[in-house]
Length: 259
Image (tube, rainbow, N blue to C red; front, side, top):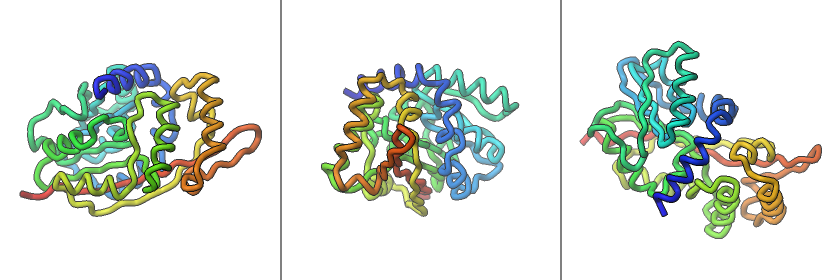
C-alpha cells in the first residue's frame, strides 16, 4: 500500500508541478511567513526542506541560512524547483530526490528541517518523523506545517475521504493532538503551535489535481452532506455559482533533544 501511494504521489505531483509552482497557498500562504517568524533561521545553518514540491519553502529560507537542500520524491517537482531557483538567482539551494521515509542523508546533518503541507501524503508518518529526528543535529529545529482535522473519528474519516477523492495520493490528515504526540514520541519538544483557517475556491482547488467533472460532482455532494462536526472546519459558503470552503492548518516549531 505504501508503495502504491508513493507511485500515486509521483504521478499526481509530476503532472501538477506547474500548478503548484503558481499556487498562492503554497507560494505565499500565511503559514510560510509564520513559519519563518517562529523558526528564526540563522546564517550558518544547514537546512533541509522535505517534500519541497515546487521549492517555495526552501526558497523562502535560502536568504537566511548557509545552504538549503530541497528534497522531493518527484523529479518533475524538483525540475520546476530548479527553474525557480535559477530565476531568482539563488546560489545556496540544491535539489535532491528523496523519500521522506528513507532520507539519503547522514545522521545529524542539518540544523533545520522544514516540511510544509506534505505530511498528509506520507503512508508511514511515524517513520518519516523518525527520519526527521535522525538527520537533525541535537538541538536542531523542525519547522512544520500541515492541515489538521477535528478530533471526532467519524468526521475525520469523512474529511480524509473527501481529500482522497480529489487527490488519490492523499494518505491522512490528523488532529492537532495526534500530531503533537507523534513529535513527542520521537524526542521532539513542541515549543509553539499556531493554527489558522484558509479559504479555497472549489474549482481552483479541484483543478490543481486535475479532478474530472464526475469527481467534482461527488466532492460537491460530499460537501453538501458533510457531518455537523466538520462544519466549523469547512465553513462552506455558496456564492456566484461556486463553492468556497476552508481547511485548517497548523504551524509547529519543535526542537530535537540535545542528548
